[in-house]
Image (cartoon, rainbow, N blue to C red):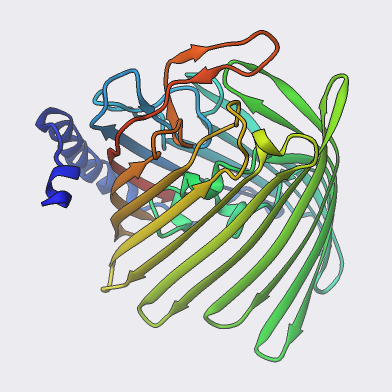
Length: 383
């Protein structure tokens, strides 16, 4: 009986989502011929990825569901901006050991409109087998799927759990990384180190520079198991002070026969403002593949051990169920339904009205006082 009450949903928004499913199916008829990449001459290739998504909830407009600290999101009024994105990538490789990559990503960020930014722009040197040096702008390896975080087609779920992936604050860095992949029998061990600078952006607030960004990552892979551990640190510049920021991650993936499982645990720490910054998050995903259909379930949880009223986010837990259907080559349809509980805090995945804005302190948003039902439909594709 409790489940029936919790998942009840107004018919009008759900009808809108079902209509979008029909549109998505029609769109896929044209997407079925997409390919992995296109050669532009002897040394240059062009590829891309994207998501067409719609999200609707059972809340009014003053409580909006967002992803990754977006400025606006979905309520009973459906939103196409929460999950939709488009990535375009150009790679040039004039020699076996030298290449360059530029990738742009169009999505909603800290502004209410979609915007396009250069996500990657780096030169890569591979002087020896397994050894690689890159320099430029790159995604920070904060997570198990950092390189494919925005490539929906590469992942089982419809979107990464905010309880983990919205906690990082840092997305990209400008600098260099060095990696080495060591084969060990039928397995391999990869190690990498990085150094550079980054920034933190939040809706309605100026960017905050982060200098002396450093990181180390280790990943072990077998035929069907991947284990990863990583740590990134940086010095957050908030004049006249400077804070030491640390983000640690442990993750595992299992893909064996038809069984799919994935888990990750992260810790965010601040040296001088733990009451406002410290947070822990984790999730567990499990699924079973039936030919082209993969139903899955997710449980995710985030907790803020700090006691400050001005914490960057509140506590949140999510129970989700979804299905991925690889209906066409290089394109997949996904549907996901979630129950998101913020435990009477502002949570991680919501934009709510400002109730207080003390001078010199971050604004305080209204808490979300009941669990929220979220329904999402997406078409992921690569080309």
